[in-house]
Image 1 (cartoon, rainbow, N blue to C red):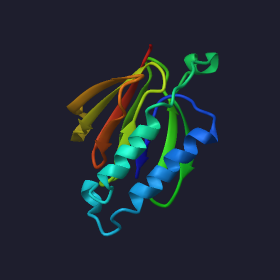
Image 2 (tube, one colour):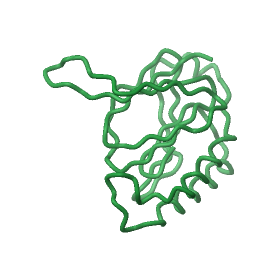
Image 3 (spheres, one colour):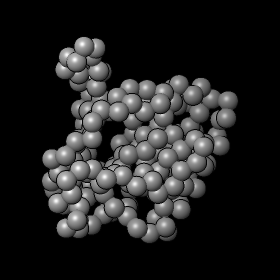
Image 4 (tube, one colour):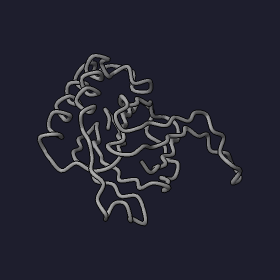
Length: 160
């Protein structure tokens, strides 16, 4: 979930949960229109904290279709010219391949059930193995984790 780009695990179906997050994203986007896009300074820290607080109580439920899903699923709950609010269903053991988020993206992520692992990677030329720059495991109930774009992130679902 983010101001600029988003990632979050599992499922929610209520627009009553989504609307407050969208409002918080709009508030964060409106802070500093002339901010430096590349480092996320355009996103006001207080508005980012408010968005994090709105994300914290959201929880998911495990459903049979999700547990047995053969691949990750993604739904865009809301989007605009400068943001994307997505729900990613990432069953345990499955991995979203490394993908780069645009520089200046502020990414908030939180598992809605179970746990997930995020790795920041530097992709190497000539098909060599990527270099791991960071690894973080986030569990349901943890505070939302904030990342900046401009590099590749890989996401892995874990049962729980």
